[in-house]
Image (cartoon, rainbow, N blue to C red; front, side, top):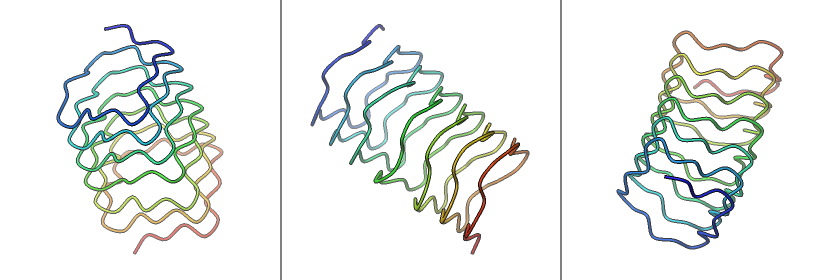
Length: 134
């Protein structure tokens, strides 16, 4: 599905199946994406402010160079996700699955990772100042 540059502001996409969708440069500000299935989707250069991604399936998603600040993450599956150059500052990623995610060059300052699954992360050149692992 090609939704490049689509205007999906405030869209109600709860439980939608958008696996392998091309959403590059789409505007998803204030969208309800709870329990959304986005596995292997291309989400590079998205507008994601104030999105609700609780319980979303984001396995193998491409989020390179995306600003994820101010998002609601809880019980999100980000296994094998491409999170290179992503701004994750001050996020609360409790109970998030990050196994084998690529976080090279990501900004993780003041990130809260309580109860997150962190197996086999790629962390080259990451900013880890004040990361909370409790």
